[in-house]
Amino acid sequence: ADLGMNPAAFNGIFMIARTPGLVAHAIEEQTREKPMRRIDPVNHGYDGPPPRSLTTNKHE
Image (tube, rainbow, N blue to C red; front, side):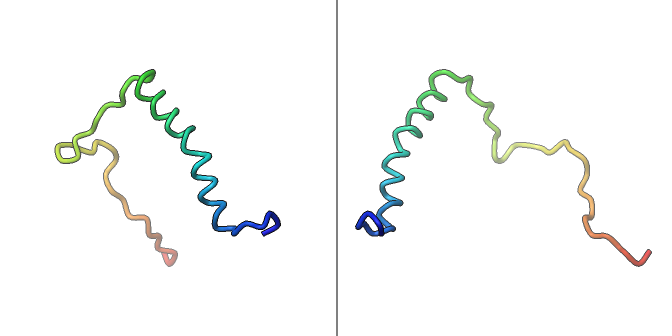
């Protein structure tokens, strides 16, 4: 409001200013970094500890 602009307009200005950096980062990740291993969303398995209860019984 001090600059005579609607405060909601600053969100758009921020997004416009931020976009080139995000695009550059995405291009850098695609060209310089090793690709992450892809996990099949259907054919995968969990090998961690078994599920446990997170509730506590304070009366014992």
